[in-house]
Image 1 (cartoon, rainbow, N blue to C red):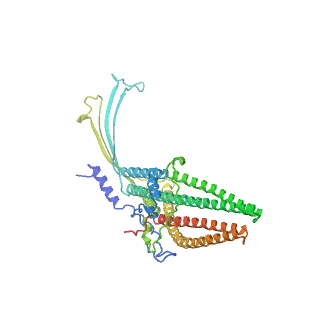
Image 2 (image 1 turned 120 degrees about the vertical axis):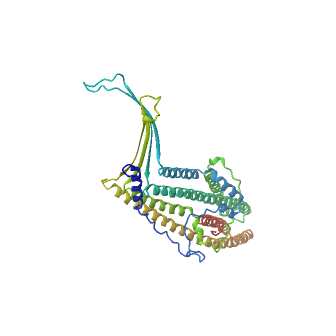
Image 3 (image 1 turned 90 degrees about the horizontal axis):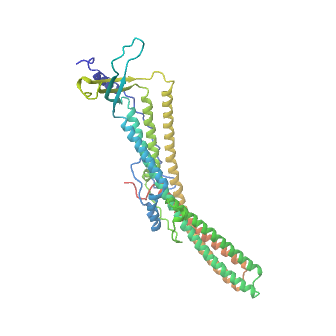
Length: 471
């Protein structure tokens, strides 16, 4: 057997030799290494950042609120942003399937017919009748992935698909945290409304007392006016709090993918209690963050694209073959005498392209550098977010305790001042001052409690789940 008689064998031998010289694999840069511990706590450990660990489900149950649990369960079903991310995952999966299919041979079949007659030129011999030509054929071609262009493209598509899946997890986690915080703000607004209503009732009693004392000639007209001013101001705050509560309820409805008018939550002035942050939080919890995993995958995809563009500097090897039948009639078209076939190989190499391949290679390398910098920035932001919310949660817990002690003292001072006013030993201005201080501090207690819930909620989002360490 000689290569002259078997050109296909020669083509395969050339492809094997070229494969031994395939383009080298591009090495990715080393990832950002987190510090051994965070500044605000001594209990963090060095973590290896990967995307192999899932987000811990149902982390919001740590707040022990059944209404919140129900809303979070409905969120995944109706949220429109999640549907957008799901569609992006489907698009990326289709792109991966397309890149994989390019590694297989293509096969096409055709059936054609022509009818012709030679009448060209003055000396042409006209045939007795027009000639028919019928053809049935099948063609196949296959690009041999000598330089790894197709495999690198498939690997890049796989990384992009995984990045899209991680993006979906990140969007879901963000929506869950946003829903939780909106719900906390709703309950805080309801608690503030209850406080204001209680104060309105107290101010109404104070106004009645002042009017009675004014009628008896004991109090001045200015005391009545001050009591009326205080009452009307509190009533104005009530209307503002009602509007805020309605807006927060509308925001929850939109998060669930519902029209604002279709959601009605039962009023409950009980603000959930923030769970205590454990003293020991392993740094490996950051491995669960889907935004970090998505950034890692995009770096890998960008470096796979470098392999694709670099392969364009080398010749492309394509194996092709065709077979078919041709005859003047359809009745005996498929027969051995009418068989035509061919096999062959071709190799093409661009000689001059004006620098397009060089520019494309430079562009993909710049995009890889961009993806790497974006990944490192994502890691740094993640570390900052955990740092910020750890110290914030700790300090807000202390502030909340101080505010509660201040509220207790303010209420005692108000009771004493009211008794002194009834006894006529102080003016009503002292009562107004004591009532304003008590209302302000009570409102501050609720605000701090809401901020504490927000800080703990953000920590749970930052570590992508519950406190449980990574197994």
